[in-house]
Length: 125
Image 1 (cartoon, rainbow, N blue to C red):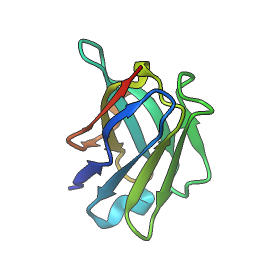
Image 2: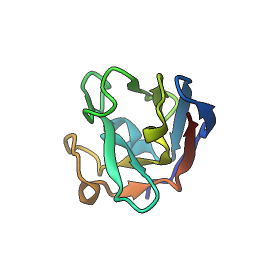
Image 3: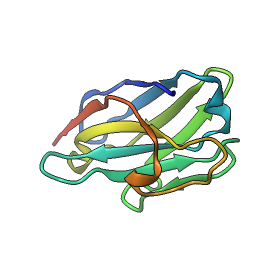
Image 4: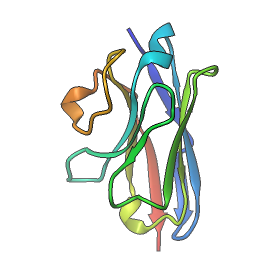
């Protein structure tokens, strides 16, 4: 079983930055693809970014390319989401997710087995 705990959310003005962290329990972290998703009020949860086991391959939704950066530290069992140039449209609850070990990067909710509780990001104009 994997437990994920996110932190780092908050309220910022447009153009500001936040860094989200997600700490994972369990020894399988370094073998698991990790992802960040977000869900705005009244909308579906959508993919934001994903990262391979090694951290060498990263994937982003078009809406965040060039502004967000996903990274991981396998020695600390932590995955990060650096969010720059934030826009009001980025307001959402952000969720960390993990795939079962030894599977590839995926973009759909159904392909991630473990989820954190979410952290709220609010961007004001």
